[in-house]
Image 1 (cartoon, rainbow, N blue to C red):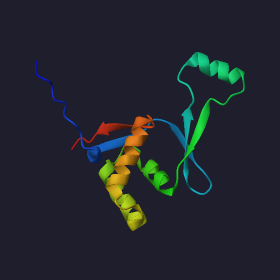
Image 2 (cartoon, rainbow, N blue to C red):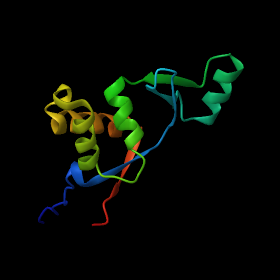
Image 3 (cartoon, rainbow, N blue to C red):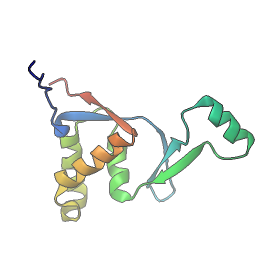
Image 4 (tube, rainbow, N blue to C red):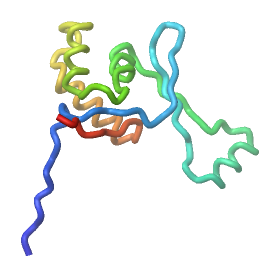
Amino acid sequence: MAKIKSEKQNILDLIPVHNEEWGKKADGTVFLKKRRFKNAWINKLMEKCGIPLYYCIYLDEFGSFVWSHCNGSQPVFQIGQSLHVKFGEKVDPVYERLGAFMKLLAYQKLISYKVNPE
């Protein structure tokens, strides 16, 4: 039997969408609220013990900028262009760094992707 080739998408063409709750601190940087456990029984037990159900992930200014643009309206390529316009050479090489960051967010299930309709 022959293997079926799966068509891989270019990450720059995908549109990221948030999967977690988030907010902004006073200085404008973003924090993400991630649930500790998926299991409802464990969550009830932790709540009874007084253990917080969420933990926070704090992003720096670059991560905060990227996260705020992951709103489901623009592909990763456009986010990279905006990132380079705002921060200039501080983020070079922009697409390598952005791609690694987006893969990390997707691996942690903080974002999901939808396909660009173009």
